[in-house]
Length: 405
Image 1 (tube, one colour):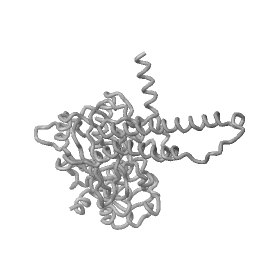
Image 2 (spheres, rainbow, N blue to C red):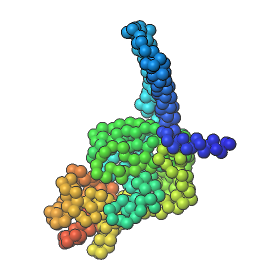
Image 3 (tube, helix red, strand yellow):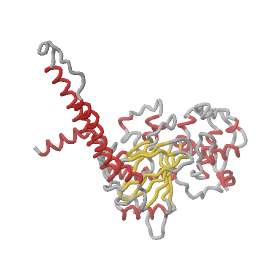
Image 4 (cartoon, one colour):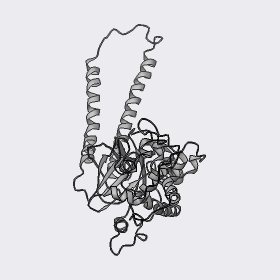
């Protein structure tokens, strides 16, 4: 009987707003349910009055209409009752709104920057930052003509190459801004979302109670590929977080490999889907190894090395598919006028200095890619200068290093 009750509750929950894993999300869910039941009560009362009136005052029962016009008592009740209901709902809602805006006494801060189309995360005061993009499996499956069934990809469009790792039981203040257009950072399980606006910093906060993986997306129509900006937050116990952060920063005595957080089973909250923890850990270990090579700026040991065209083209194609294909397309034809074609482009076939500076610093709708290594930038520039019938020579990591300085 208990099992049937739990199953029935789970079925009902699928049709309702998720409860979430923060105090704010639970309060928001409570308000949602309070107002829902108030609306249900009003609906039942109004429709009951309708049907009673239709039955009790039908013409066959009352052939002679009543002559009264108005009732003062009914008018007063009709006016006062909605006012009382609104006040009863506004009092708890105001308290929750005040809590939502109160980011004081935060124990740590994370700066979140929206780019087209990825997120940048910086642990304020911790000397560590990284970028988070759509994971490769989803990115491949979304390409037109890929032949990959999206349903075969785990967490399709809801997985990233680098998750935002945060500690549980810690008040975290998120500082949100954008580098190009308006984005919105939204994780339903946290109970809040905020717009990331260029030139402004918005705040929100969360204290996550339960370890788990919580998924969300950009909730603003930020551009053609805005649906490919997932947000994945992984909450781990504080001690595990400290070990992970120390490993990422390369602190003395820390072991990066050993300090990787144990991938926990995904919470059945919001858009999260339960998966096998072991499989997630194994998959993410491989993904992190690859992603770290691309998303973070590694040491450029090869900065002074002369690389062959074939090697640059091979690396450049990978970097292009990860960072550029969404705008300039696999064909290089781009999406004019926002993202011009690279085929025969004056920038791509002209002085390489101009192209390297644009990749490093961005231009118009194109975000900066200074977080890539010198070798990666040299490779992708070389790739675009020697693809699609372009034939414009080789760019070496040293050329990029000279302009980066």
